[in-house]
Length: 284
Image (cartoon, rainbow, N blue to C red):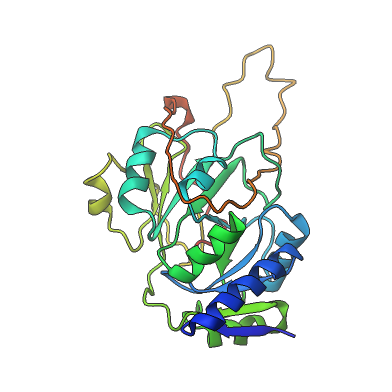
């Protein structure tokens, strides 16, 4: 039977975070508030739990969920490298409604769906979400919306009505104040690419970094575009034998309580600039 905790009560907040952490370790699901909408969370390193999350939403593996983090250090551990422009965006807009698409680190071991070697990462600006993420480490979190439902939940009641007993713990943080999803920026190329307008206006982003627009499309507010990484040009000798390689599994790091956020910078090359892709995924 699902448990629900009123996070406006300090005692229930503390108990709710403890129960949510325990439920996630058991491979169960948790609903929590964010600064945009309510999200449903699973342990990022448990493929059975991730499959359970996708099933609870009625969603396929072709729509990989994003990852939420409680510290910048946790985000850095998930990605291949962080450019100076990526660091500038993080410094300016995290925590907040900005989802950044990175190439995921090939040394980590998780399976969150058909990611094509990329991962969407965000640090939400909500004390309940951050409280849980700093206890658990990175979590797979997507909107607490069942696929067939019309509205994305901005209250715990709406989330519970859609997801019911498929969720072990509901953390009630009151109505979410934001009804606009996060802005999505692709950092897999040499220049940041706007993939979805959202709570942070493009002009505000351009005050911090150069920004190019992705190809126009009209995604569902819950969708995340997944950057397409272009193949290497085929040579005449290799074209006949070339085959498409699998992106493989992407992965994360264990939970960390350390709140210090040292940021390492890196540089992405021009040939990493992906094209604006189909929009799988559910980003809150």
